[in-house]
Image (cartoon, rainbow over all chains, first blue to last red; front, side, top):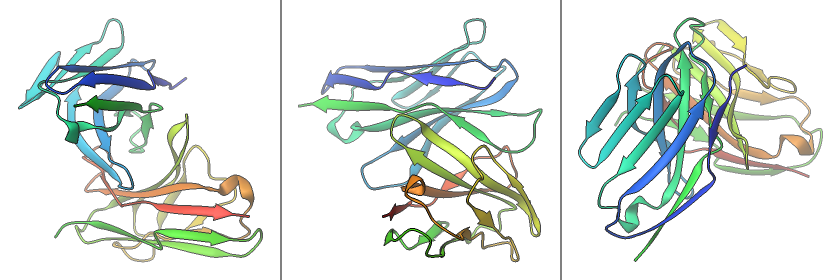
Length: 113
Length: 112
């Protein structure tokens, strides 16, 4: 079945790199996404990667995809206090064409000054 | 400004009292969807709509109804709310099903 797993909590110091990990079970996933949710706000798409890619870099964000292990990671370089939020990994299915996103439980990132 | 709006943002109601949460997008998106967010469970899809008059169930549709009479609006209807529907609800839209989904700010519903 479809399942996405994330660790629930990560704490880092300001200026360090943060790595948030995600595993998924469905090998037919077409797109994999990272969303950010700040307190009291909706979800903001940070970045996404096609399943035929291994890596994508966008400024401070680096996404790595290991298709063999069904493992996705988000690295945030030079983490700032403004990066404190909940980060959701999500996958979508090209074959089903329903547009449904399967979300992980979310990882709370705490950035200490 | 391109956005998805939801109303109300906060709602406290009692069991059995019908309510509607509105969702509207100004991006001419064909695809719209409702999710609920519960602690430790992430977001789960309730209903989705591919276009006007085309709706279908997501993973957790029980107790909910939707309608899509106009492209921009996708209201979520709880005919007889129960306490287990206490949750944070998000509406989302995208141009097409697999394109980037834009999320509304969320509606926090409490059913007592």
